[in-house]
Image 1 (cartoon, rainbow over the protein chains, first blue to last red):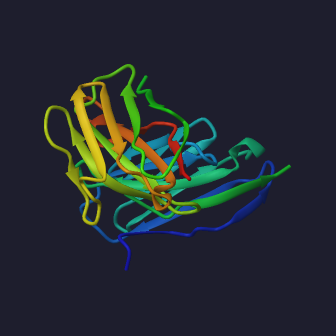
Image 2 (image 1 turned 90 degrees about the horizontal axis):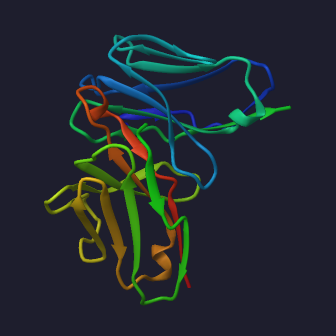
Amino acid sequence: QKEVEQDPGPLSVPEGAIVSLNCTYSNSAFQYFMWYRQYSRKGPELLMYTYSSGNKEDGRFTAQVDKSSKYISLFIRDSQPSDSATYLCAMSGGNEKLTFGTGTRLTIIP
Amino acid sequence: GAVVSQHPSWVICKSGTSVKIECRSLDFQATTMFWYRQFPKQSLMLMATSNEGSKATYEQGVEKDKFLINHASLTLSTLTVTSAHPEDSSFYICSARGAGALSKNIQYFGAGTRLSVL
């Protein structure tokens, strides 16, 4: 079993829809949770960062962490074609290294 | 803030030659930088952790003599692919660990370098 599981998709939704992206993990030592967006042939761009459990909102993006269920989510409201990318969840126990999910390919259909 | 610059973005070289990739933290000091390799439609694979002023720590299976890493200053780390061969063709991405108590657990990534070895 992988430490971090993420549905690779692809996921296609119409423009304006709410997108829900998720990761599950098995290592209870993870405390720092991140979501990155990666466009084709570009480096990952940090979208959201959360420490421990709870919700965090930034514009159209909301990150949720449920440590009791070992489950994290990223919600995108009012999705736009420019949101089409691969979304990577990443997490850390504080030892510098990040453990990544496989990434979910998202396409927003105009 | 937290901008990481990576250069070049794309390089083509002949088999047997060496290629150097630079990674710079532009607006913060990065004591730790990371080098990743990414194959098409796959996630990032950590190659090595680079600490300023000391030898890099390589992940299992990564050849130290093949992928030379130097982190001579707090803002610059370099990856040199020595005697490159077609199987080394890939997308290489660097990242820098943020400064500060909380952001030290965040990595900021460069734009990546696409290496094509002919």
